[in-house]
Image 1: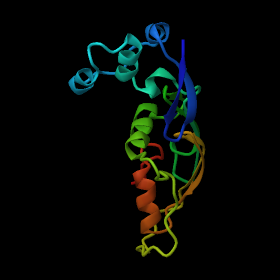
Image 2: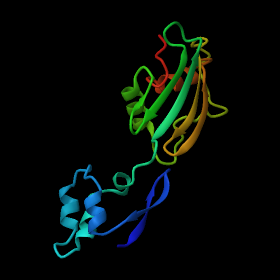
Image 3: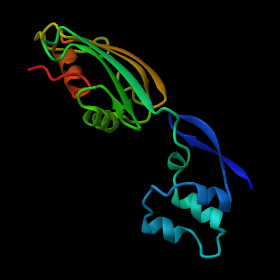
Length: 171
């Protein structure tokens, strides 16, 4: 039985087993497109078919998934507090685990920091969005996170609003 290295962006390299036994041990969770089925020849060995049908990310789950701690202050009653959020698989005591994970997944792109601060020199409206602050720490997409949020001007308020429902909606 052989093995190959599988690379997942932001997650590093992992060694996965190949061969008939490995293909039978991996639960089939991905859908197979017609194009993927046609790309594999009929004479290809079964291990090649199994690797073509199941992406490396499905074959090698990341232990522990993504974990964030969100500390919200001065946002108002029912919003302030410390929340734990786990994604992939979802869990924790965040008020909207599924929504927060789905929202972060939608914003996550290779080469872009979802939690990046407003770039220096940005032209922002001077509209104060309130005293709410938040700090998000942990790991997301295999990278460390330590981000602070506020609502001191239009750019900071827009950045906060993009992170809802991870951060509470402020009206």
